[in-house]
Amino acid sequence: MGLELNVFTPATTMTASTAASANVDFNAIKQRQQATWASGDYAVIGTTLQMVGESLAEAVDVRAGEHVLDVAAGNGNATLAAARRFARVTSTDYVPHLLEKGAARAKAEGLAIQFQVADAEALPFEDGSFDVALSTFGAMFTPDQSKAAGELVRVVRSGGRIGMANWTPEGFIGQLFRVIATHVPPPAGASSPVQWGSEPRIVELFGAEATDLRCVRRHFNFRYQSAAHWIEVFRNFYGPTHKAYAALDPAGQARLTDDLTALLERLNVGGPHSLVVPGEYLEVVIKKSATPLDP
Image 1 (spheres, rainbow, N blue to C red):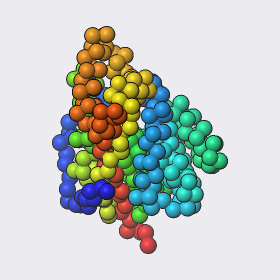
Image 2 (image 1 turned 180 degrees about the horizontal axis):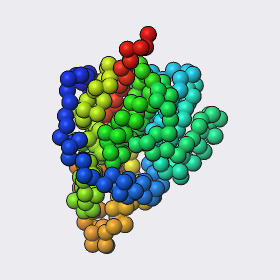
Image 3 (image 1 turned 90 degrees about the vertical axis):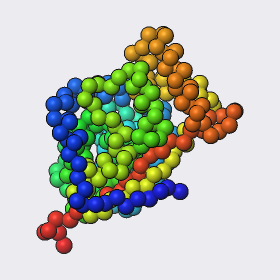
Image 4 (image 1 turned 90 degrees about the horizontal axis):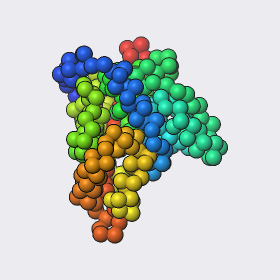
């Protein structure tokens, strides 16, 4: 069960983060992040998260025949979930290799899906083109968070829905990123992606455009043989961890391994013979405001 919060408060706005980002080189950060996600093979990790896409498709109430856009789709978890519900789906990401992985999965299931390389901060679609926009652990990694949020709102029709799954600051992935940052600092001026897993930040980004905004804290269980097994998989295939190890000398790699092992063992609920680490994420469903001309 998740904890549901209706956090829609139209008058709630915050401008500090907007002001702080005024002089940040977002293009430089984006190029670095794109190289990160193109490294390793995220699809190895991503496919284990399929149930998150299915849960999000249900939360957003994807209907047959609706036009659905998956933003920063990765290997296509939300893409496939929507297509399985007979929606007309366009799947986008700025890493072509990941779209190829999603296309292979769609072909295996006989699903007709359009795949298109696209930047989440500059989506190549007309205003109001989609009934629903989805993003599972994708849009949250954009450098310019306000621009990405604005694009999600822009491409959805009035009265349409936006659904997201975002890792929380307090959860396992939020803690993972803090551990990595102590060994390999993030780019100067970069905002933490797990801000998107904070209810106040979601209200800040979307509240002015929403008639309803609901957040539910859920958990995905990372299931591996051991801490060492998790580190092996994430070091080889998960872009942020893969790049962190590549940036360190052998001594630094050993220290990172020690810190990751300590984190995993502290959060493990699977007992001494297995690794089960709950990863908290925020499931977000937003209904876009209707314009005065809409019926």
